[in-house]
Image (tube, rainbow, N blue to C red; front, side, top):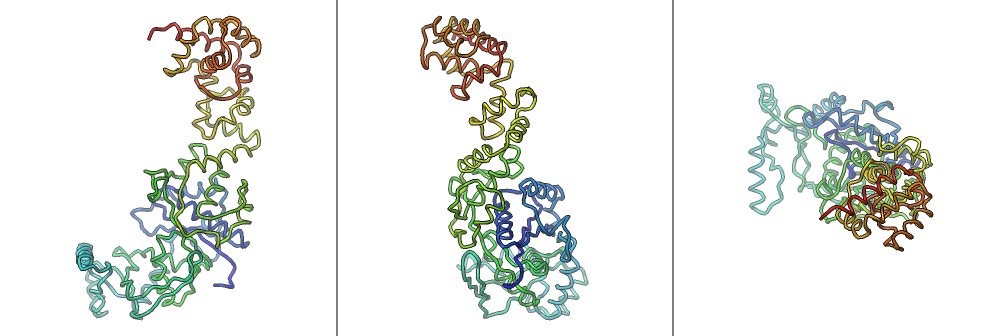
Length: 472
């Protein structure tokens, strides 16, 4: 396939929500396709009926569309190589199974799960790698078929040829060599009649003319088996590249426990597409250009040789860095919309523009927006013990003076409070900030006070005065 147009693919199983590892795989395949003026194909691998759910098919397509990762072939974008759900391609697989059986390249296996488990345990105890021992390989084909016809449960195994070396050039890791004697005969059809991942994944990549496959390194040992299947059937191989795994901040494989979140969860938290794409484009791929870019810009510097082989470590702080850059790049109307979606009814419509401009440097996520919307517009604040202690130290007269001057502009208000209390510097501005927002740090106080208006500011100062008088 070296001279074929570049076609990559993303082929998720719809058994859960789209997570960061799978999303990075989708992104790298999309960037490789764009960088070569090629196509990205989306295929749904749903042959595992028990684990597949149409809800997740819809969710993952919605996530990809939200991120701008459009596919040029797949569900909704049909071409000659469809259908693009493997559950609708069973006739293709069954025809190939019959061919492999007829040519002696596959055989029925009647071993139960318990028998296979005990065999693996014996192999481990003997210090050998666990692989299928070939128990059913010698059963005559007619006898095996008769047992199947009588209702015996059987998988179908691919007969691995002995004494061969399977070689392929990995796009990320270079030449890879595997001895066929180490592989063991493997299942290509489950006992329920459905095609296994190893089989249909390889067959569909070739049948759909996929030229390049970037996928996780956990699939590396699947590749020699898929090479054997395709070579035996007479189908061309794609070129595979195996991406380094993603670790959590604790150095363990990324999981929900150590920081992994679904794309849906990240979206709901307020992460914007540009932040997620720019971060993941650099997770395991080096890029000298650290500017925020759109997909064409990211594709322009995407190179296979810049994909690392060492595990990449997820860093939530880095994701927030890209989020900050992405929020800064939003048009004012888009930023207001993003904040309004987070703040909900707390944020008056007429204040959206002023609020967005004021708090933008202090927010990264929707939770930050809600916190500041509450600080600016809630009827009352829940003050911390630290804030209450500060109020007592300032004294009720301090806040009475502030309340009396609430309808003045900020410069006049602070001058009057300073004159009444003698407070200066931090002793003047920290109590005022805590009284107005409940927060020790945040946006500039002058525009914040103006946005609140005198009635709300006076109510906040009165609340602080009351807390200053309250007993411990």
